Length: 256
Image 1 (cartoon, rainbow, N blue to C red):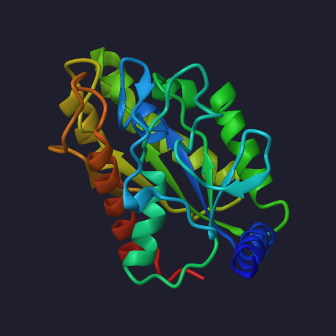
Image 2 (image 1 turned 180 degrees about the vertical axis):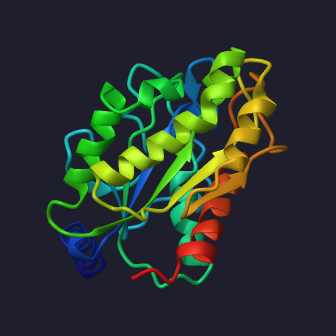
């Protein structure tokens, strides 16, 4: 009984500790929302050790309340689809495993599958939702540390979309920094492992070529895909999460 009481106190203390939270926005399309372990519209329920719940890892729900994070992180955000394992929980596990002094972490899921970058432009529903959720995440305190961005598969279908990707992404980053009033907000993007069309390398080249301050890119190329040749497997998602954590610590780990 005593152990149970202590666990409950720890959990509620974590929920109340968002004044000291380090907050990360998760945005993009299906590989950020998570399809690891999903086949034929069903998730297999397999949760690797790196993705298991921790009382110090919270998520902002669709109702804008903090709760203990658990897979699938995007279940109430990327609605109408079956979500599975994404990179978010493994990212936090990596922060702790790599020796970061990070405490209570707040994840803000915003990703929606099947969305081209044009669907994230300023003024769109997805853009407005991201900005609104980001604002709600800090209303009681905390600091937004970075945006983690994994998107672009839907922009590989036409040459026009692929060629426009770099400019659209740079504009998106600039607008988000302005509208969130965080001029140097770090953005860590994932270079594609797959795509819906034949212009994958064009989009990848654009992602790798972005040269704005505090923008980093990790590469998912070569990671194992599911049988649809589009979505990462569960263990590939874990690898992406750990790569994102390493990139954050290496580049931004000493930020106040």
